[in-house]
Image 1 (tube, rainbow, N blue to C red):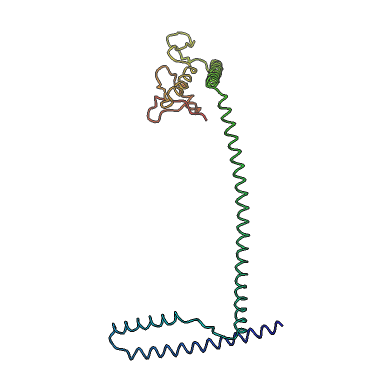
Image 2: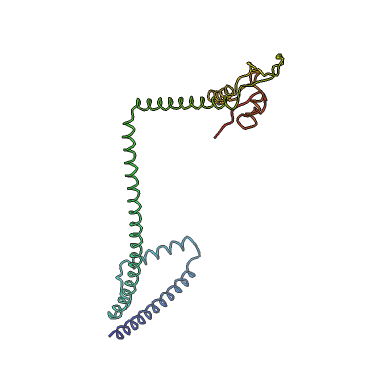
Length: 257
């Protein structure tokens, strides 16, 4: 049965092809006649254009009133040709369906990824919102008075700590770095006396530290006659103090990190 249908389809295709070739030959013949008739027309281009327009309008009117005729009168031939076209159309539609299904699967995968990303971002947003609300509640609990009191307590603690450090520093300096002493030439014996004009090493360090704290933009201290030179030399040699780059009579405390 299938072989019979295939044979009928081939026969119908051959018949239609033959009829199409006959019609094409007829069209070629008519075209040649038209070309030959145009050569016999008048040589005046305007008249020739008008004639062509009138001819074309008459042919259009004639074809508009005609009923289209089937190329083949045999219904079996037309049926087989229609089946062949339908099979081609079905094949094309199947390809379109496959392509659309592939696109659908791709869009479905993309949708799932987008939904997963949206869920993650939603969770992050909820966590951030909860954190903001918690911080706002904590900030509301902290009043201005409590913040001020806490700051004052910290300042007081730092002052006490600074005082203890200064006391410890003074004790260490008094024990290991005694006040400056020079030979007193007015004394007849070889005893040594204290020059009351020199300040102690503790006072020098306090001056340097206070200068750094009060005027950090200008931390240098002028060296005058009250500074004992060995003290200055010791501070410079051990990296505790630095000289001014342009003025050797100014020193500052070494910045410790």
